[in-house]
Length: 331
Image 1: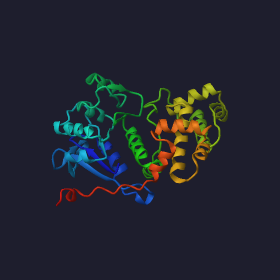
Image 2: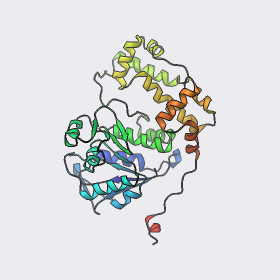
Image 3: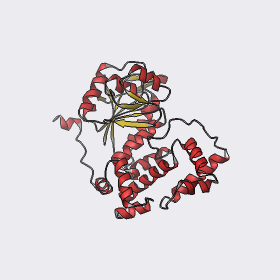
Image 4: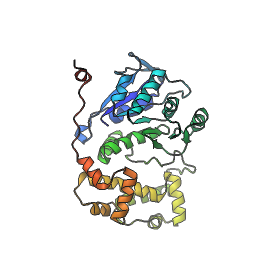
């Protein structure tokens, strides 16, 4: 995923455009992040109007989508606005070639309009989920996760979850350290799984003692991932019963203590596989897994590769960049 294309059209959200540009645009090679080629692809040349009086200058045509490693589709400020036919056709052609496509927020409406989400799971902002389901009943609409993937098509919920999805895609393609370096430069959290809830039924005020206790527990747990932590242990740190702790934890984070721990242990394991030559059993121990077998099962299920295959892929030299368009055309 070195060549990243933004499918642009009039009326796309400036925030989504800024998120995509901030993740894949700057040169962070000194921080160990691969260099990306980010292009803004449109049906027509010339400035494109955006909400708020802004304009965007595309630098490639829609034909570039099919040669990209990843296409990102920003949301339209008005999801009910139609997408130009050439944009829909280009997305269908690129997906047919196997190019992954990620839609931010209401960008799911664009993929649905292109017919790409038929029979597939998709998510959008919880406020827009009923509208997406009503307009496209062929889509399996979810309103809880931050992001989901189905058949090489990624969709995300509202606003900040677009950052989560973009960082997740970097992490999947280039490793946890690259994603963390980008997150640090953006001063944002480096890891939120797609299973986090979009919104919390029982938000806890930041100044509340329970919220402070839970934050302290999470911080202590992150320092102790190598230890055999349990919900009962974390509940004891918080001064709560395990049942009460689990309830308050889910209300504050949108996930269970077990899933939260598992996500951070897998992230720690990725870093160990990328940065060290520790044997897999040692990686499992340092990341806090009870056994190598358990570690392999969880890692393969969540990452899609076994630990050794992931290490080999992370250590493999980067492929030579594609030549410029002019060279490919023989000019």
